[in-house]
Amino acid sequence: MKNKEKIESGVHVLPPLPYAECALDTVISANTVSFHYGKHHKGYVDNLNKLVAGTEFEQMTIEKIIAATAGKADKAAIFNNSAQVWNHTFYWCSLKPKGGGEPPAALKKKLEADFGTLDSCKKELAAAATTQFGSGWAWLVLDGGKLKAVKTGNADCPLTKGMKPLLNIDVWEHAYYLDYQNRRADYVSAVLDKLINWDFAAANLLKK
Ligand SMILES: [Fe+2]
Image (cartoon, rainbow, N blue to C red):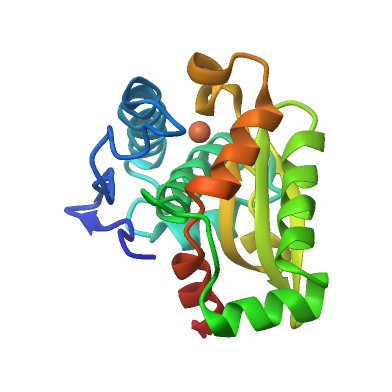
């Protein structure tokens, strides 16, 4: 990921947004991005730093913390905050100003092989996003060599299920409520048409 979390002096830092807070405002207002990034994403980073201070997790990367705490009831708070840090950093990279449109050729070919058409892929992503009950995420993933649209609840992340995430869409209410109130489907549709960053997905597909 472009803005990968760094560990500086044992402290996880909030990565910079890849664009200005107002850059997505054809779909997501600067006000929403300001709260989402500056309060929610930052809050997960701050909570994680408090939770791991002085523990075996303090010097681990975010990915290692997620792997080490997934499914462990006594480590749920560390898992939730580390996964939400990762999920949000991934989300900001999954969007871009003037996104949407046509994916790069190699990704488009793979999308058409696995979903039939680009439109079918977008419909499956929209269905995953709108049918996630309560808070969570929709994802385009590579699973067993095949591209799939999947959903996860709360902080859960496909990394813990052996899948390779290519992009995600945050469907927690904090991602859209100020702009769209209860109209999650309208937010998801606008994101897929105007913001989704197919270049990021294409780059993730090529990663080992
Ligand atoms: Fe969020």
